[in-house]
Amino acid sequence: MRVVVNGEDRTLPEGATVADVVRSLDLGSEPRGVAVAVDREVVVRGAWATTVLREGAHVEVLGAIGGGR
Amino acid sequence: MSAGRAAGVEHAAGVEHAAGVGSPAGVEHAAGVGSPAGVEQAAPVARPVANRLVIAGREFESRLILGSGGFANHGLLRAACAAARVELCTVALRRIGVGGPRGGARSGAGAAGRSILDVLAEAGVDVLPNTAGCFTARDAVRTAELAREAFDTDWIKLEVIGDDRTLLPDAVELVGAAERLVADGFQVLPYTTDDPTLARRLEDLGCVAVMPLGSPIGSGMGICNPYNISLIVEHASVPVVLDAGVGTASDAALAMELGCDAVLCASAISRAHDPAAMAAAIRAGVEGGRLARRAGRIPRRRHAEASTPMTGLPSL
Image (cartoon, rainbow over all chains, first blue to last red; front, side, top):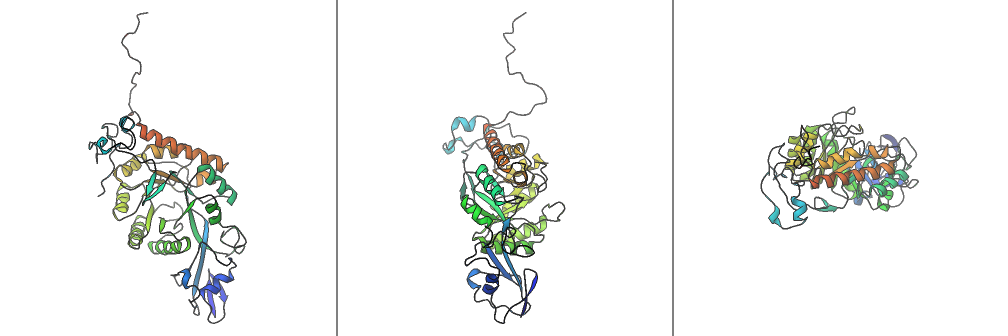
């Protein structure tokens, strides 16, 4: 199954979830300050493990950076 | 329309000092409430002035808010937080681990590198997420939703810019985004132009503060239109935070002398030769400006006014 993660094409097994994608980014077991959107909709942390990605999904995994002024 | 703060409310010469901060309501004279600009020095108006900055019910000791953009490394950010003694610092959201070291310093969120959130937490500084980089209300609203999820706060520094050359706010998109976010329960702190009407509109629709620019982001040009900032301050009943344009300590002092409740600053600190030293200087500027505002400055005159009596002059 092909999906787009942060603008890059990725191939994931069928049934892969948002939690699988986050895990693949090597952010540690309980990453703080991370948010996910799939096809422009926010996926709350509690739903990462149960949100199954579909073919062609656009996933954005965002974290904190220095910013502002 | 908001109740407005009277012109000169915080700097009516002597009155506040004599009556004492936190004195009973009796010292609050009605004169001057809603009066036009230009009469600032005329009417002695006073009311108890809170020493603390209060935004949406949250109290802050510090009237300087730090922006975390532009720091070369976390060490400099940490040093600036300590020197400025800030309690609130902006952060932005960006893609993790793309086009760079995975989870490294650029994203700041990975296991490999220490997160900016760790730095701020250790410094005792709360996070104020922003929507930096958004050009449309739709993007800003979505970014705010993601920030709420990422940082577990419903506070959002709302930025919707018109173009990336000036980084000036897009008023139409800004108002649209603010309306939607307020309706969705966010505490919205909008970065706005120095347009008093726009600031009032943002307040009226439920923003918990207004954050007018002094001049374009990162320009260091200070406050280009002090008159407009004064007008915003006079009419606002939510805190006014001077946002963008500060280049050095005197700019921050001027903002406070004009009656702003706080100053947000990043580039002037993060890109200074010595960020920690500039952080301390700008903090001192904020404090000096606040003290001067409350002390009640003398009116400007076109001619001299002698401070020494002319009577009793000897004939020599």
